[in-house]
Length: 142
Image (cartoon, rainbow, N blue to C red; front, side, top):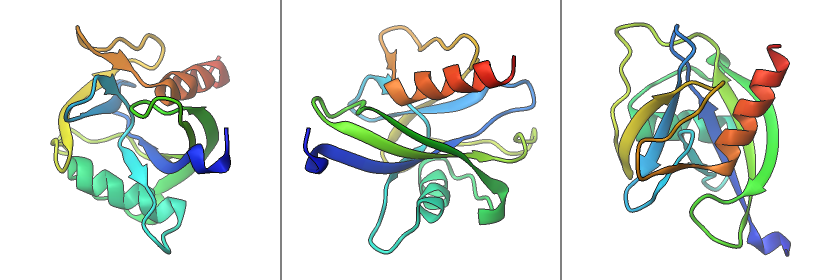
């Protein structure tokens, strides 16, 4: 595939104290994924991660609270035939009981998943990036 087929995004891993990870599903799609999205002009991957997290979930974090986990290249979730290059960040601290994400912008649904055994709600599936990051995180914690 040509470079024009590569979509560049930032994604954010948000955890609760019980280890569950936040996933989102955009309206009109069937795949759950991490909060995140495409870069605006002049925006760094880190800035994109923070902006998208606020826009999609209402969760506001400082830039210094986002740790870079790495970059992954996968199939795009909702654009057949396209590749995805994702810079993935993790919110350093798990969410507290008072921090509650809410679906906003194009997000229709939020759900929490166990990264060791991710299961999408009935009738939906899981984005390739989410599966790869979960697999890598699970391998690293063994």
